Image 1 (cartoon, rainbow, N blue to C red):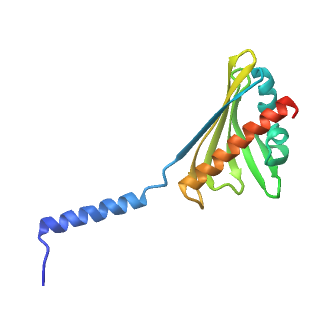
Image 2: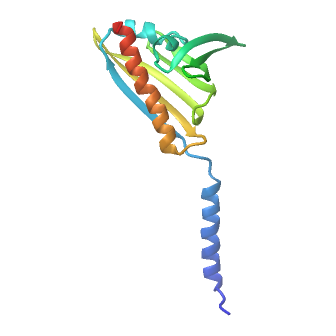
Image 3: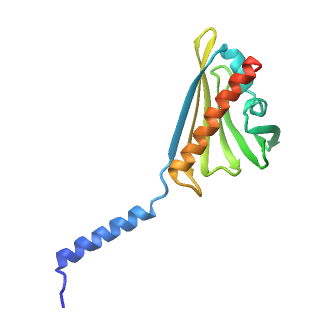
Length: 168
């Protein structure tokens, strides 16, 4: 029968404890950041983006939007094409600086603790840069799948926004 020395047992014990500690850590937060150039003045783009429920008019995955007050909080319910809905809460916005931040309340997205920001910057008098970013943890999907889903929402939104602004 073989026995371990005290030093070997401590080392193995330390590795086991380290492994258990790492396994007990909460899931790491993920970030997604997409950007696009929009051929329109910043004020015109902000008219489409700045109103919290306006997303219902330009995002291709959204059939409609219902705005409501929940106490002091402003919330929107996005009715999705094909069924289902997403509920989000406005956290902050700055019309003067052209940004808004919101968080996910409920919905079928493979994320939790989701907070997103949409920010506009004028490139020149007729071109706007839009940056749509978020911070979240994957839920019910791998990190890569969650990132891909959120990234796809943003990039398809950019295309919908372009179409809405050009009338095509």
